[in-house]
Every structure is written in C-alpha cells, then in structure tokens.
Image (tube, rainbow, N blue to C red; front, side, top):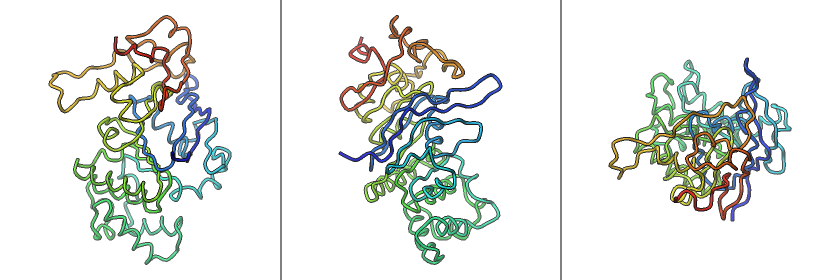
Length: 323
C-alpha cells in the first residue's frame, strides 16, 4: 500500500462577501496517497477548485483558510508565503484551464520556461534547462520550434500543452490539473494523460484532476472524490464508486452524464439547486434534492464513514439506492 503524501485535516475555507461569510469548503478530511491519481467531481460551486487552490496557497486575500495540510511532517498552513515558495514547481504544481493567461505575451516561450527552470530547478545553466524543456515538450507532443515562439502564435490547444509541460518540468510530487485538458482534441488529451500516467509511476507523483468530465476521471484516475456544498460526500476507487455509488448524489451525478451506449434522447438532471453556502445548515447538505431522504436526514448531519475501501457521508448508504 502506498504511503500518505499529503494529509488534509479539519480543512475549511471562508470567503468574505457583502451578504456574509461564504463557507465554501467544510470540514474536509482527506489523505492523498503517493503515486496515486485522483479525480475530484461535482457540480459547479461544489468546492472542487476552492479546496485544491486553498491547499496550494493560491487563493486571494479575501479567503480565510483553517485546518492542517501536512506534507513531509510540515504543516504547510503554518508557513509564511516566503517559506512555502520553495515547494512550488518542485513539490506542488498546477495546470489551469486558461493557458493563454499563463505566460507573458511579450517574451518567447522558451525564455520564460528557462526562467522557471533556473529559478526553481537543480541548475542555473540555461543550456541544461533548455535540454530538459525540449524533453518535456516531446512528452506533450510539442515540436522544438515552439521554444522560439511567442504565446500568441500558438492555438489554445498548443498553449495548453505548453502549460502542462511547464507544470511537469521539475517532476513535482503533487500535480493538479484544473480542467487542464478541456481545450485539447481527444487524441492529444489521451496521449498527454498516458504520458502523465507513466511519469506518475516513474516519479511517484500524485495527480489530482478537477473536471466536469466523468469519462476523463473514469479512464485516467484511480480514485474519485465527490464534492457537494463544500463537503466530501463520497471517496473511493473509481471503478467501485462509478459501478456502485453509495451516495444518492453520486448516483444522480453519474446519471446526468451521457454514456456512449445510452440511447436515451434526454439526459437526467438533478432537481433543485446548490445550498446557500452563507448559511450553516442542519442535517444532510443534500436533503432538499435527495429522492431517498428520510426524516433522520433532515435532523442529523451524516459523517464521512468508511465502507470498505471507500468513504461515504450518508445514513442510507446500505442498499437504499437499489430500491
């Protein structure tokens, strides 16, 4: 069994707003294992990106973060920004969806990547840095001439590949991909994900995919985290969770996505809307939208409980979804 790479405990994120504090991530407890890939799924506003951005210390000053993030015996939340900086690129890295905003438009791509490598990598030698950059380009299907191009000369898909190459350049232990393959064609996406999976095994890297595409999670990750209303409702091996979801929200979320062999003309939708995150609620966060709800669900908040090799926050996890 793999060791724990990153331990998240009692983790909360609050935002200030004119109408009151928004409790965007609520009491998250989660272990990210070494050399393991994760998919984080849920509707927009469920807390997926906020959770990971808070872990990586990338939220703005309007956010308040509490709890612990333990990495190699160090609580990262206790560090000053200047102390945390040494972990960026080499230990933690991220690829965003909007790759066009990633690099300066007035400098060539190669020059900017060399700056990243020499500032954070094992050498200040620009020739060695270029060699490593070009090796990484090959992994994401980029030609060497991209090195001497400006960002505006590339398509959105090519820029996304540049962003991915920069993120894996220094072989981070923890790589986040936030909708990072959305702009790519399906062949390039598959090739890049295959290369990243090989890199994971080589470098004991943990990858976290934040995505709306359940098929990407199903085909390219080992474990899945299902979030709703800032809470984790279910976590486990992808195959087990997708084949036999224990939480009603997971079941309904999967039914809302199209399947290749599904002949239905209309997709199912989850009735109702997300909860008001400015309020502290009693009972299950999914109660108002749950077709399986009981009175006990309204009165009591279910804890995230282990069921074999997965966890689920539902009083009705045993058998009710087959009714």
